[in-house]
Amino acid sequence: MEVKGRVHSFETFGTVDGPGIRFIVFLKGCPLRCKYCHNRDAWSSEGARLFTPEEIVTEINKYRNFIDSSKGGITVSGGEPLMQPQFVKELFKKCREQGIHTALDTSGYAVLDEEVKAVLDHTDLVLLDLKQANAGRHKELTGVENGRIREFTKYLGDINKPVWIRYVLVPGYTDAEEDLEAAHEYLAGFKNIEKIEVLPYHTMGKEKWEKLNLVYPLEGVPTPTGEEVEKARSILTAGRGV
Ligand code: SF4
Image (cartoon, rainbow, N blue to C red):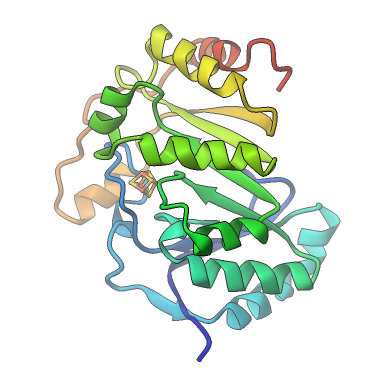
């Protein structure tokens, strides 16, 4: 029987999650508990819609003109896509057979077993969300230790997988100079990183917490200024040219 994915939603014309125009599949389920989560309703698998890889490829093919002419592709995001490795592997395999570029948007919090490695075998680009380089503050921000993420990141380096790093700049949580310096130092060892993006924290996810009758943990935290974002970007990318 063909494996089915637990899907939260689709976005048909994504322009910020990988190169070109992307068909984005948001999957349900996430082991992290990020305080700034903009997809709070994706933590649990409850209410997921089920799709086979074939059904999703059929959907993507409706937009192939736009995707192909912009050198885009598919991005699987979440939640955490590596909670459904069999499904993502099958989906990416089918996409690649049809010449569709595959990107995986992940926190990297996954056990590096054969299934997860097989997903990476069919992945052209990893968008790796680096949350915090300091171990204690990582736990405080996301609810999980970062050891697994570090192992995952190292493996991406070992197999020379193209990676774009994404760092959400949250005032008071991820913007301390020493943390940015630590992140820079950590990333400096990886030659497979093609790009480092700093994403300013925003409150657009707040509404989802409220809809679920939950208290938004970052109430009152401001969006960083352009200057702060630029400063963080220059620390993280120093000496890399990316
Ligand atoms: S990894 Fe993403 S989906 Fe999961 S809690 Fe963090 S921000 Fe939300």
